[in-house]
Length: 491
Ligand SMILES: Cc1cc2nc3c(=O)[nH]c(=O)nc-3n(C[C@H](O)[C@H](O)[C@H](O)COP(=O)(O)OP(=O)(O)OC[C@H]3O[C@@H](n4cnc5c(N)ncnc54)[C@H](O)[C@@H]3O)c2cc1C
Image (spheres, rainbow, N blue to C red):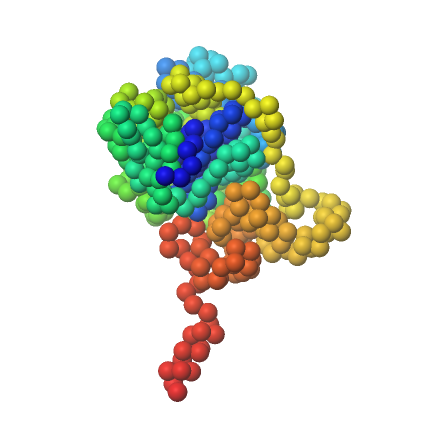
């Protein structure tokens, strides 16, 4: 067995990263394990990115309790960790008289959950603040505390802060079994060897039921529930100022129209159970449903300037609630499962709740004297004025070489993304850290350069560079080798 840890966390989505970040302030040896080549490649990379205000879930559900706390905490956390976050507020818009009772129910639920500053606003208010909204709009629930965040950067920032405070992150390390001795967890078996620990936290998202089964817990049952989306170029000139929802259905908050933090317009998601935990395909029917849904709220919205479609999978437990609890049968094992929406909005609160459970289970939480609270802000060249950019180029000429023209990403930012803490190993990991490839041409121009830079910095052959996970290598062979073999074959 390798070194022994106090706590091993399985899964580096927002839940696992938040737990690592929360625990890293205590005198503990922490190991965060992720089966893929980057953090935030599961559900955390494909969702609506809303910090929900907290009026959707019933107050007796864990979702209801943790959402409002997470929403309150994100203001401070986003500042300390330099996570892009915009508090633009949300509207649930009623288009028919029948919707009004649902809006009132949400308002009442929000009051019970202690959501601050909600109001029911009328048509005039709506038309003033959302000029393109449907003329059928009657009333809306306005929740100014809702916002939008960059989910993968939130997870990365927490993982990086945990590392700065001594935690270890091991990527491409898949947990294959949880090791138990005399009713107590003692570690995990992975494809990279065994790791010993006194406590194991299962934050494996869609696979949390399979990890739980490794210690004999059968009651967690995760169904993948797909949500499909369109995303627009940020140059699209169509005014949407808030997170705008229709009235919700029993299993979904409906098709949302919202700006992202980076000002791309996002529409979606659908909500349909699927068989496979890897089925991330978008479908003709799903995308039609998204567009039709969005048009109910914004009849003038068209599909011009959409730059990508994508899908995410919610990890829905049968209880339709978060399942965050210590195992009854195995001491030291804690599940953080069923983290579907509002898992992102609740993430810091989920982490706090998990730390409390670990403490109840006997983990000693003594605060570090030298805990580093902040994360240095990454350079975001695309947000800078020309004068600021010129200053950066004066300091380091690598800022003067623009690799991604759509999003104005410099060579230096890509170098930092690869060589910084929890560095990028794949093309998509570079994209998540810098936005290279996130623009209108979707990497058509900068993709090959990013492959070259990754190969150069990681000391690997360009044919080994992956897009994201599994066998997603981009290049099959070098053209010179192919030509060489042809010359040989013809000889
Ligand atoms: C369509 C959609 C819309 C959503 N919209 C919102 C929203 O607007 N606001 C909001 O608050 N929430 C939203 N959510 C929910 C939110 O995205 C999730 O709650 C959150 O991302 C879950 O994070 P997680 O860390 O629990 O899971 P994940 O992000 O899936 O992370 C789990 C990690 O565990 C890893 N893993 C799995 N098995 C193993 C193993 N054996 N060994 C090692 N690692 C393993 C996976 O690779 C993965 O990285 C939405 C979800 C979807 C799908």
